[in-house]
Image 1 (tube, rainbow, N blue to C red):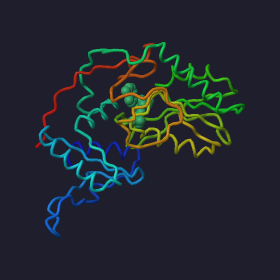
Image 2: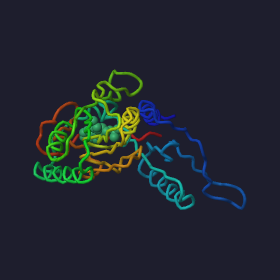
Image 3: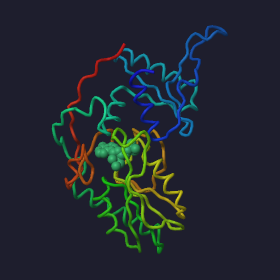
Image 4: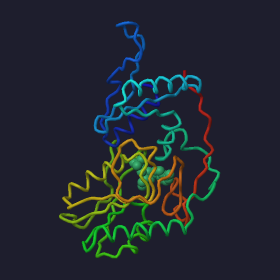
Amino acid sequence: MHPSERDFAKLLDFYNIKYLYEPRSFPLRWDGQRVVEMFSPDFYLPAQDQYFELTTMKQTLVTQKNRKLRHLRELYPEINIQLLYRRDIMRLLAKYGYGLLADAEVKGIERAMFTAEQVQQRVQELGEQITQEYQAQEIVLVGVLRGVVCFMADLMRRIDLPLAIDFIEISHYGADSGEEVSVTKDVEISLEGRPVILVEDIVDTGMTLQFLLRHLWAKQPSSVAICTLLDKQVRRINDVPLQYVGFEIPDEFVVGYGLDYQGLYRNLPYIGVLKPVEPKFEPQR
Ligand code: IMP
Ligand code: MG
């Protein structure tokens, strides 16, 4: 494996996501009966039925690889494959304060993505939707610490139902907390037989969510729905259906309204885009 591949594999291991390394070769071109070109994606995630191809190459070679990938998709339309650049992996790791980009200099907030008013408006709509869809049921909101504090505080006040709240916190990749994700603060009230809404600040790869869902279902709630303020759909690795989404956002690092970068910016009343000065990557090979 290349260093980037190893970094990706370690991250998957942390979240207990099963993968196979280069499990299958797809013939792309034939000369008569003879296969003259093949493509072997780097990773396959069986539970997600998703292939990943990692590239650390120069832009000209990436173009070639893209062409190969397009060809692969034409010949095998049933397979799901995603291309990850070295920068994608570095960003993935930087989120956990790890890897090259973790030390990137931060220039501050570039711009607001959603103003405080826009956030409040959307939170109110979500609260009304939840109120309607759960009618007279007694629900439990479970917030994922710590990014969720602002959203949770506002959302609960927009829900007109009898409700209880609790919080859960889990360890993060790269912290000195071990090889595998674990619960560092568990839910304390009983969830048995109760409708639960898991409240998240942002869903990015979805790896945290997969772990949390498995953990919550073990407590035998009657249902579990997910309500997230932000959804970075383009970065999804582990796909999970999200019932309530505040905003779908592009692949940019956002802070404020509870969201942090290395512990800071949570107290901004709006959601802003952080502009890190990313070092240029030396293409490998
Ligand atoms: P996932 O497991 O990749 O879905 O990670 C979700 C977690 O990553 C969130 O709960 C956040 O703590 C963090 N995260 C992901 N994207 C951002 C961002 O743009 N700003 C701040 N935190 C983020
Ligand atoms: Mg979080």
